[in-house]
Amino acid sequence: MSKKRVGIIGAGPSGLAQLRAFEAAKKKGFEVPEVVCFEKQSNWGGMWNFSWRTGVGKYGEPIHGSMYKYLWSNGPKECLEFSDYSFDEHFKKPISSYPPRPVLFDYIQGRIKKDDVRAYIRFDTTVRWVNFNEATKKFEVVLDNLKDDVTYTEEFDYLVVASGHFSTPNMPYFKGIEHFPGQVLHAHDFRGADPYRDQDILIVGSSYSAEDIGVQCHKHGAKSVTLSYRTNPIGVNWPEGISEVPLLMRFEDDIAHFKDGSSKRYDAVILCTGYQHKFPFLPDELRMKTKNNLYPDQVYKGIFFNELPKMMYLGMQDQYYTFNMFDTQAWLARDYMMGTYKLPTKEERRVDMDKWLRANQKLESSFDHVDFQTDYIKDLLSLSDYPDFNVDKVAVMFKEWLKDKDEDILTYRDKTFQSVVTGTMAETHHTEWMDELDDSKERYLYMDESNDEMEFTMEKNTL
Image 1 (cartoon, rainbow, N blue to C red):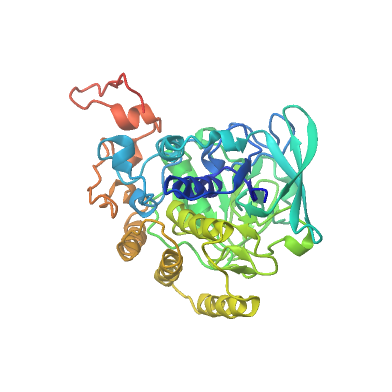
Image 2 (cartoon, rainbow, N blue to C red):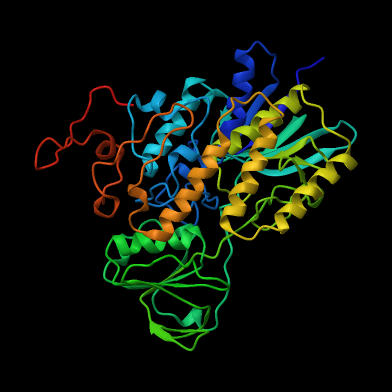
């Protein structure tokens, strides 16, 4: 019999987790399917692969990434650590709990480079269409090689959708916004706070991107930052220069009017209004349709499309856990594709999904959300051989992180936590976060504090 084929759409953290899962099985002596991963960018990493481009990329495709300069982890690295590849193993020394983007990207690459899976990835290749052939029971995937401008079709027995859900902006309309004379952009196209120095900035939204972009603009010299919320404010103890107001209602030129009757003039507007789950390459009968939440309907264990389990989705939930959650999903998806994990019947899967959906509807606080996703991770860990880690201790760290942010939104990144993988306590970063305006890996890892000028000491053996 011919070898089974697995297609993976996307080489971000979720797609790379799936490749890593197959490599882990191969090292244990299992025969694995033929795996091909398609990535429309020129490098792996998904959102962590920073690009200065906005709008469209080199080959005219919509830009995937929403990453920006000066982004630092907004949660402790100890909460996302791979249980089979620690920060200690990668960096050979303790580092702080809140690294900047280049450092986390280096960590992601370090694990996947260990397995030399780049050969499985076809870069500059985008998926145009997917059809499931009922006669052959295979997926027919139409692909575009963007670099060579070649369109072709391949067949797969299983398909893993790991294309993420932070790429297609949700763009609301506010009366008069078309006449606003300053810059209006979505967070998807935000590339750093430098352009907003000495400006009055309006940010529409009340989730993590609004919080982080608002604080970054404040840190890098904006005159003022106003965050406008629809239902509930973020509600942390904001410093002078950052404020929250109710929903934006309309514009009159550069004057924004809010639901509480207040108004103010602004230089720029950044819409942090979320993203759509968008899969333009999938027909209606294969497409997961959901808003951002902790447990999307239609997918058993948050992975298997219930109508056709040979179609799997990774990383489609709202997320407290990230890298290690993608791993637990990928390990279970791998076991199903290799035949070592048997799915219950469709009806039994529906009962299980409904149980989780009912629990999700009862959640009220952020702590409830953490506990819910912690239970979800535990459920997945019980079904595969992914290396176990102390999920309950990670949940405690998440709750400490939430309290730290409430206490001081500008200093919570200066806190340190202990790894549940190695027991290592994080180092305090050499510079307080509010004073650290350089997010390069070189400054983060190699700055020598032994003299007043704080010069860099570059090591010969780069990571």
